[in-house]
Image 1 (cartoon, protein in one colour):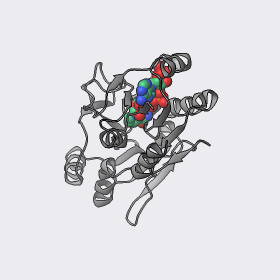
Image 2 (tube, rainbow, N blue to C red; image 1 turned 180 degrees about the vertical axis):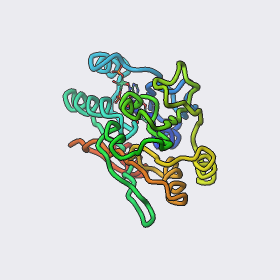
Image 3 (tube, helix red, strand yellow; image 1 turned 90 degrees about the vertical axis):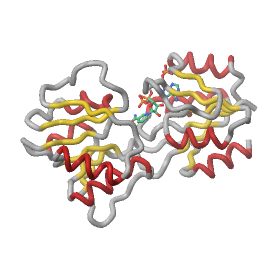
Image 4 (cartoon, rainbow, N blue to C red; image 1 turned 90 degrees about the horizontal axis):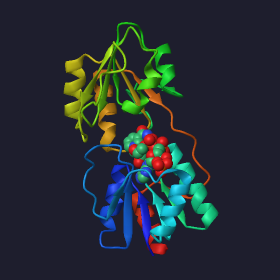
Length: 240
Ligand code: NAP
């Protein structure tokens, strides 16, 4: 058996760590310039589309695929589930539970980035925790100060006159986030409902500081096998 893990989440790294020494490979998209080390043999970069992925499966002798990509990585997940079904390979998606609001949260759910402008008043300072790839969707936020956090140093200027990048590599503690949002004078936070404790600290910080949150809703769930815990994912591997 050769298991392919599609990584790109903290859980993908933890699953790889639990499977150290087994016949498994982890694949990363190469979205960050210096990804954290993985405990399994690692390949980095896209497969070259659907045909490239099919060719890779055959060349590498992959016998099962565990998809632990980020909950918002829609293309790779839908494509992989479809191809595995077509070629008869076992496929499982690890999908961490979405965040749910608790008392004290001031969340408004939005469908995508472009809806943020309808909620955020002119003059506000907006902190984007949504990643640099989402910036085109915020082009209509003119008149607000926009701060976009990303892991890597920017490779170009900020795309809009009213904003800037802030470089930071997670994890961030609640205390870190409270101090940062206070220092920056953040009035609004925009994030994707990624779920997970590690990146949930900014929500706790927003609650403590009374900062309203625009929460981009999860993409619809697929109709393929999925689990929401690392233990269940490891059990699936053990049962293969
Ligand atoms: P996406 O739109 O679903 O995928 C775009 C392309 O990236 C895929 O077609 C594939 O290229 C390549 N790719 C994605 N995951 C890969 C993997 N694990 N190994 C090899 N190639 C991969 O994904 P995305 O939203 O751009 O995210 C890219 C990566 O960053 C994902 O691995 C995801 O887990 C991670 N990430 C995403 C987010 C987010 O908010 N979207 C947040 C944190 C981390 P080819 O067509 O060439 O095979």
